[in-house]
Length: 164
Ligand code: RP5
Image (cartoon, rainbow, N blue to C red; front, side, top):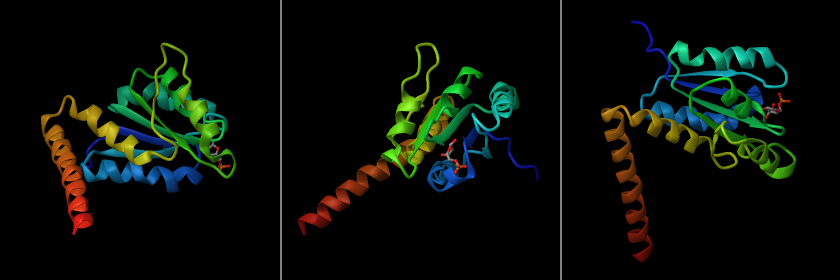
């Protein structure tokens, strides 16, 4: 049996980003969304980044999640070279608490959008990718509704436990 072709491209500037970015992979796996993972650096492998971004749509990728730390130009540069929706994850490094990554990703010029999640917010990046795919996939949308109902119930359960 052949593996399903990936719908989400999960890329990061360095393998050192993986401990943060892993949460996006987990979210995608929870919903059974096929994805690929790779290291693509805007600064160290600029041509590879352009090749990845410009070929992603024709390879069947529908959403790209790009995480990077420091001078985090990867999500924005990828967004400039693909028509696909790009979700940017600011990865916190040793200095500046990820503010550098956040500001590098979030302040995009008009015309080149990147949906930026919170610093270290890779799980939400995965969930946002699921929602984007679910907009044209009723089965996936039902799974998202079930997930949201689970969140609702979790809060009610915690409330009840506190009141006891
Ligand atoms: C960025 O530089 C990467 O996304 C990573 O967050 C950071 C440091 O990379 P390494 O020096 O750990 O490879 O481009």
